[in-house]
Each structure stands twice: as C-alpha cells, then as structure tokens.
Image (cartoon, rainbow, N blue to C red; front, side, top):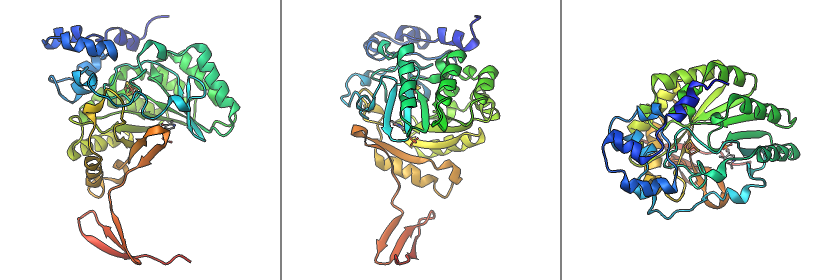
Length: 349
Ligand SMILES: *Cc1c(COP(=O)(O)O)cnc(C)c1O
Ligand code: SF4
C-alpha cells in the first residue's frame, strides 16, 4: 500500500544528535551518551517549531545531559506491579490503560514511561495485544479502556480499527479513550480517513498533550477541528515543566488557546518522579499558585484538575489551593479578588 504523508514524515524525522547538530551548529558529542540511553525522535513539523536553541519546544524534545545525572525512579507509579498482562495497566477497578503502541512521533524528554517508550522491548506483539483484549473481556468491572503507549495514533489505520472493534465488541466496555500527542507533534496524522474511521466508534474521548502556547499552530488547530467535527470529545493533559510552562501567563494563554480549538483542559499534571526527568520538576507550591491565578480571572472551563500521581501506584489526587479555613461553624473562604469572606456552615443533621 502507498505510504501516507505522516508515515513519510516519521521517516524524515531527526533521530540523532548528529543530525540535529548539523542543523543548529553545536557539538553533538556530549548528547550522544543521552541518546544511547533514551531514544530521540523529532518530527520535521515539531522541529520547525523550534525558534532557538533552548526554547520551550527545544527543551521538550532535545536530549539534555541532565537526563543522565538524575536518580528518580524507573517506574515511579509502579505500573509494572499493576500489569496483569504486558499490554494492560489495571490500577482503578473500572478502567484500564491498554498499551497498544510502543513508539511516539517525537520522544518527550519528560515522559513518565521513559523507561520503555521507544525502546525495543516496548513494541508489543500481536499476541500480547490479544492477551490484553482477553483480559478486558474477562473482567466485567472494566467499563473504560484507555488506549495509550506510546502513541496509539502511530498504529496504521487498519490496526487501530481492528483494536477498536474488538474492544467495543466487549459488552461491558462503555467507553474508549485515546491518549495521543499526534495533534501536537504530527498533526498530518489526523487525516480525514482517520477521522472517518474514528467517527464510527462512539463514545470516543481523545486526550491530547499540548504543553505550550507555541504548539497551538494553524496545523494543530486544523487537526483538532477535524477530530471535533467527527464527534470526538477532545481533552488535554498538560505537564507542568520547569523552564517550559511553569508561569501563570503561559498556562493561561495555553488553556485559553485550547478552548478556542475546542479542546478542554482536563489535567494539569505535576511531574512524576521518573528517572531522567528531574530537571523538569517544579515545586507543588508554584503549581498551586498557577491554579490559583486561573480561578476567577479565566473561564472555569480553563481550570483543569491539578493532579499528582502518587508513588507506589496510589493513584492520582487533585491538589487544590487553600481556599477554605474553618473557625467553628464559620468558614473563612478566600475569594478570587483576594478578600476573605465569612460563610456560615449548616450543622449536620
Ligand atoms: C491516569 C490513569 C487512569 C485514568 O484516570 P482518570 O482520572 O480516569 O483520567 C487510569 N489508569 C491508570 C493506571 C492511570 O494512571
Ligand atoms: S508522547 Fe506521551 S508516551 Fe510518547 S514520549 Fe511523549 S509523553 Fe511519552
């Protein structure tokens, strides 16, 4: 079959520090050790968003020496411990993550699954995918199946369609979600043909992963519009990244821009304790300040949950700025304008 444009784009991606050095004129030698440990790939489109060395796009996709001198945990969320079969992570009773793909269009330097995404042992066999489907079929409490990886949209249309059909054929599955960064790093992946295919599987929720307003380009916007027009409910998961987006004005512009693209901010993630990503970590305090800066001045639709995913697989917990203090039966509540309002609480019956 003829190759699609997006497959050609993947072939033309930058996958070595040497290629990158030729373009930006620096010495690739130090980065080669990083690249040996954690894979790199940058699509031509995403590379084109870099305006200068070290900018927010660069930091997200170009290997950094700091990745090598970070301790952290290989698997901070204990995903392996919650994996009954290689393609499944089952931590919450009613929903599972289904790892359908081992690769991504561009490899994010801050990835939580850095331990395996893009590595050879991550590519799942046909057998393992089918074992995953059998597991979902055998566990009737599973209502919600989240296609993840890696990036599910790196699968060819035919494979994706086959998996969606098999999962939706399971009577107790009520919804499917897809987590993908393709609209951000490979918008040409969102073809009309893909959207026609996805449209058949309702309900379908798709969470993408924009981290910076500079990623909200015309192409990305058009990709999201095609998905939204196909009836897919779009959400976004942003990771709070030091030196990339850890400022109220940036997050504010990002979330407002997403809403204009019909993408609802769903989560703002606090960085996990993943090995090799320490240089991106921010304080929880600064995350809470950013959340506080959104509440009031910006549409409520632009206030996602700020979540921390706890170590040892204890799950996601929302972190909320301190708005409420109790004094007896009176609540002291911080209003958006900075004042403190007394509010009487009703006694429990
Ligand atoms: C985040 C996550 C989910 C989905 O959580 P929601 O809060 O429903 O979006 C499911 N399973 C695992 C293992 C997760 O980490
Ligand atoms: S797209 Fe997602 S899974 Fe892939 S490298 Fe980025 S954060 Fe990791």
